[in-house]
Length: 106
Image (cartoon, rainbow, N blue to C red; front, side, top):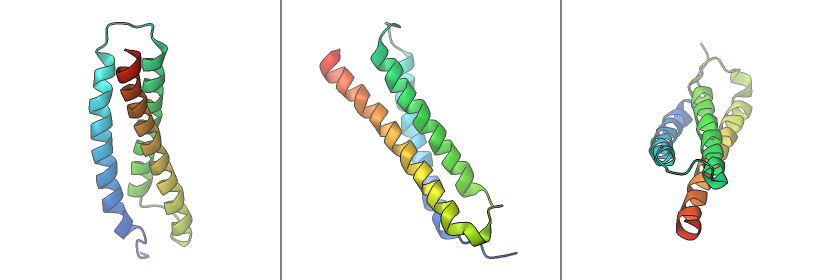
């Protein structure tokens, strides 16, 4: 069996994704408990958060997947990192939009 080239990257990415997913899921529960159902902004916030959660879970799967092509490890990791960072950005955009909505529009 060839050496796992992603070994040093696996643990930090799993830890970071777990922490971010925990915060985002906790944050998303606040969106469920709202009185009005016809507001577009909370639906947009939910859209951003769901995209972020999906991408974070996909990046977790990719970094934990051990059957990747060892010769293409750098390309595999780069795509996984891009997926992770895009998930983080979407999750934070959802949180930022919620803060702006709460501060200025509510």
